[in-house]
Length: 346
Image 1 (cartoon, rainbow, N blue to C red):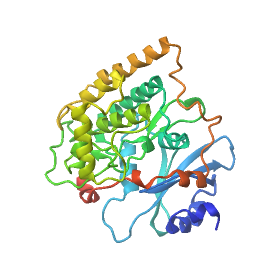
Image 2: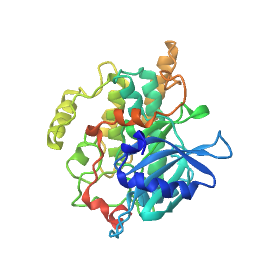
Image 3: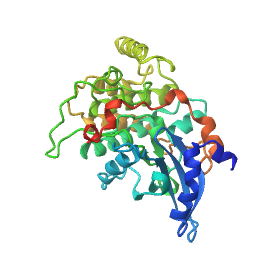
């Protein structure tokens, strides 16, 4: 067993033999790209075309469970994203030996979380943050238009592309997504009893209070993420209970200290998304215009706002050991127990 394999869930290590058999005709398995709560992502390299690489996400479905697994649900959501260029394209899905599930999809570059941690959470230029915000708003608008919300927007679930798309933003990890609309387009009513779902550091107050989430909550999480990118940190520390985080967020909102000083565009961004109720339709165009105007201001000053990751010299992915060293348990995603039922997710 290699050093990289020792850091993976033993069940997934056992699955690698099956995985190699499944993809042996076309692909060989490369390094670990990421390892999260709902699966491990590996790099796949074509045996016949060395320039052709994709990613495979691996997880284990419990035999005794009749519930929809996280990977099954993610496949379901991805199949609804056919026209959404901000989500990685899915190339295939199957269940192999020992109920090991696989999604084969586009290979992407580093997540914003990896970039942040690699540079000790140094603040990024406001123009670049505005560019990220503009693209993320578009990504969420596209996702919401298909009738789903993400429910775990954070730097770890936002990734850059590779090569010609290295400055293109993608939203990833749809395992916690939930259908928010009926098939006729009308909004689902909020449920009365909901377990917490998301990552506390970036979750909205509504989500932290175990209330049902809607489009607005995705955008609130995006607002918090953008504030962190610009300032290097958020006003509330990690490792707090959800009740303590709620108090911090309520206090920061009252004092107007969430957006960093001088970031008027972020202040207005936050004012809009924090004012939205469960049923309100976000003004995506307004949010994008705020970001674009900030980009234009920074361009007029001579700043580059289009190159989102200038610190890395190449598009190489992190090795497995680097990836796991950078993982932060305080950013772990939490899923509500209610979301185990297919009916609740659908």
